[in-house]
Image 1: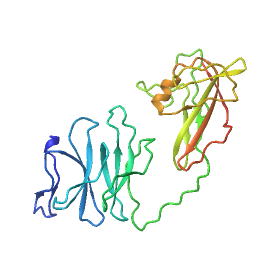
Image 2: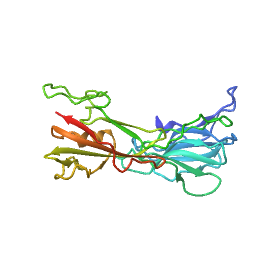
Image 3: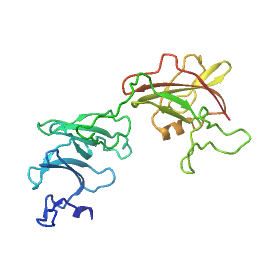
Image 4: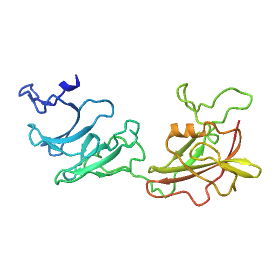
Length: 273
């Protein structure tokens, strides 16, 4: 069972088998410090998927156990090869419906203090790893441009024709219906934010999509109203009930380096049936 798990040490010949941590808690990731004298471990009580977990450091004999994390959920500790610094994946939210706020954090194990966010948690950050000490990083071309966004129609994914009962599925399955306005955004160094203006043409003017999924009153098409893109599932829901017609779509994007779309973004015209 989870409550029986613990960390043990043993010599390569199988001798000196001993327990380093108490077996009354769930134990996850284990990472050795660069000098080989300490362990970093993630520990938590098994109370569901969003269980509270913490990062501890301890000596190889189990002594000097010290709490290092200060957020609700912390896991996947990774040591920096430069100085006594520990990185981990952390989530400050206790809401089980808000699990997308994971971010990478760092803490100086040589001094008492709080952890510091390394990433902004706008996206689900992944597991960390360090480039091998002494090896050169691969050359990365300079990035001076904002993210590029392409509508599905540009990529050959079109809405179903009026005479067809087919649904646009663009790499979707029966459990995940495709968006009525599929798009893809690309950037070399990382996307920070995407805002989309979707305006339905009506008598020479446009009715722009609002954040509640409804269309606003008619206004000038040259003055687009934007909504924030907050994930594929939210976007599908937001655009699910768009009535058929001709739409003008514009994207405003920003990457992690601060490069953003020009003042007048490109206008894409799409027909929904």
